[in-house]
Length: 408
Ligand code: ASP
Ligand code: MG
Image (cartoon, rainbow, N blue to C red; front, side, top):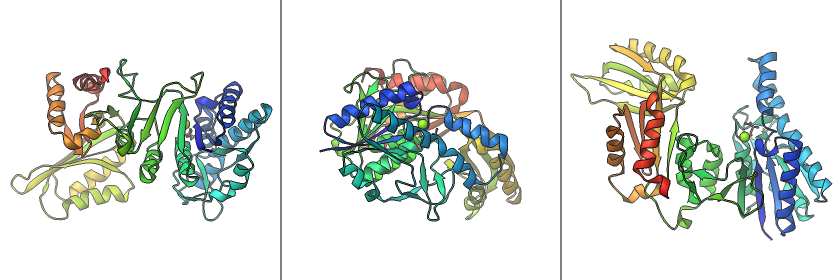
């Protein structure tokens, strides 16, 4: 008997009718002789509605209380889905995060899962119940309710799959898998049937929104295969993307996909002394403010002076700029400036490990379109560039075509 963990996102459980459809699908998997654990999100729009209620009441209030409110969306869905399953003669039991003993740290609103007491639910599984577990929530050491950050139900599903040693973790959403890029930008983006976990990790961290990045990190760390599929497909044999261990990928491709992110902003401090400690001064002040830095470039020094450029999330732009300009002043910088109209575009593919020339092909393709590259960074399996935001769509389309991703 296989154990399957399935996760249904907000649109998949967006109405009582949708929940009935999900129940039928779960029952089909159960009837085929599988043990099934289902993780659900809040009904679509519900988490946003709860955030609005919080903001209308006390936006600067305590994080602990906010999580108490935010976690209720998923609690409604587990109850409804369990009732729907019961109505079609499929025995089910609902579990909140704390009933399932999904333990987390106490970083409210962005808690990390530290462990799951899988045996809490073993009895029910053995008795043949479908377990319906609330995503996005857990409990800290003191019994406080915590939430895992937006999109966190994906992470709950993968963590449960790992803890229960599931055969597969299926993530049901409103698209039938991962595409070579966002089909809203490139209409002939291709569906990817199978890809590596590490590739997915890079795609997610470079801006692909199909799976929550923490979920992919978890899956990568524990080698748990994830299948992304659509809950809007009629049957159970529609298209899907299997994100799996690298050794299970038969054919390594040079470029698997093009990811992009317009949520970044660029900051530069000019003419600071090229001395030990300067980078740590500049970036230390930024990280002390809990601002995460993405790309970093330091220029070759000229007459003992150098420039520093880095990117941060656009939401942190104003604060980061203020901090940077203050630090710059104390270091005797010539100027500090920034730009929040930038975008980052990345090509990702496991085959880059063994092939040279990918980056230069990328740069040539962009140059041919007259797109100026502002920053470059690379890892083993990705190349990222920062360009003016107004070139984002053109750059994505250009790279998608240059690497022939519409024909894969
Ligand atoms: N309901 C939460 C959200 O909207 C968690 C999730 O859907 O994964 O972010
Ligand atoms: Mg969601």
